[in-house]
Image (cartoon, rainbow over all chains, first blue to last red; front, side, top):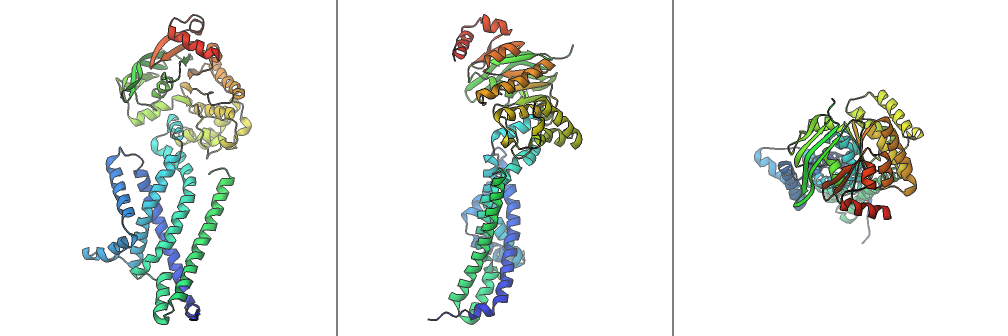
Length: 221
Length: 251
């Protein structure tokens, strides 16, 4: 059977718009994910703060232990039962953000705990309160260590964002499916979509590698 | 009369069932240099760390310049602890410089962040402290480029920048290559000559003998002997002190 890519060419505008939506959804979720990850990661630093630690651990356990698709459907199809009707885009960003936040929180916690204990002790011995020492001494060092694993998380997020097409969001995946529904050219269109995702992840990878190399050259990683 | 700079009474601490400090009494007066020696695991470091709240004392009383840090086995609250910590400079075996900051920022971070000094004042003072430890030209480099001896001298300047009432050295030369020990000891010696009150934990017996006003020997979490350097090194009363000194000096 001959391949026919003409539906892809004819639909390039829709695919381009969809790609833009995919980038938007991913970027917004990454922002939310980083915020949640920072809070939850720091909330899990000290098990002696039982309530905060408990809440954060429950969040982490639930999010990592259930499928992303189910979480997205809970937000999009589940919440309306309580009269909470959120726009699809918001549901997508919240779902992805909450999901990646769980993984990012472990990156945050791991990076902070990888900083030598002596750093906190030196800061405290100079009279700096815990929060100040965390903000000015520990976190700046931990951030540098977070970049490589955060990059992996970012790439996973780009790929996972394809699921939001099921919430009627017009991302590149959804745009592609619309093209398929009128052209019946599944193989060609899915191939094109795969290439678009590959392009997005490759650009991200190159960018991250460059950042890491710069940091390494400065001797900060 | 001024209160003693450091006053410790009946200090005790355990890690689980293991008692690491027991019934420690010690007074350090202004400008006095007290050197603490003893076998490893005798509790010297833990003792120093109890004096600035890095370890929580469980029994006894610690006063810094008359202000309680530990009162009958209870530590004071965080806010007052932070204030008192600024009075107690600490130099660690592993330097613990902040690798993401330049040498200058290492020194100015605490006084600036705590609002003690303006940016400019802090910079000026830091340059002066750097000159004092012989590293005036290193202000703008990162700690990663320094030798161990230089790192430790920066760490001393950083502690001095808080204008502490007492400086504590926790085996400050133990992590250094032998040829770098001298430059750090020289700085400590100069501080002693200026009249800085100091508590020094060290394995450098020659230095201890030279710089100390008082020598304290610790073993198994207790002070077993306390006297002048001449007495401790020439005529130790305790058998355990003798065997420790023999073991160290045999090296």
